[in-house]
Every structure is written in C-alpha cells, then in structure tokens.
Length: 72
Image (spheres, rainbow, N blue to C red):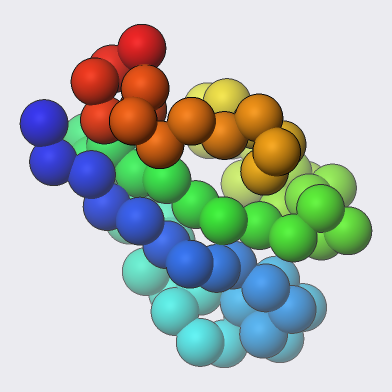
C-alpha cells in the first residue's frame, strides 16, 4: 500500500486558499490513501471546507503510524 502524507493543511490553505489548496480536492476525491496533518484549532474549518469527503480524525497523541501502514 502506498501512503501520501500531507504535512500540514494550515491557515494558508484553509483561510487564504493558497499553498497546495488547489490540489487537495483532487487528492481527496482520488482513490489515494492519504494522511493529512491538521492543527487541532483548524480542524473545524477543515471539516467545513471538505465536508463531502470521508475522513477518520485521530488526535496526535493517539496516532499510531505503524498500525496505519499495516492497515489496522
């Protein structure tokens, strides 16, 4: 399995719609396994903008990279 990591979607993308914002809809609509880092204080903005997509939200302290790679 291949994993595409976006580190991070921040204020530039969410508020200014700049940076790599233009690529996010493509990534989220494509069949690409993606891990996106979003600051906790921006999570609600992220969810509002990308509300049509399916995400699993994991707090940083609970994140298990090895389990993610194994598909657990």
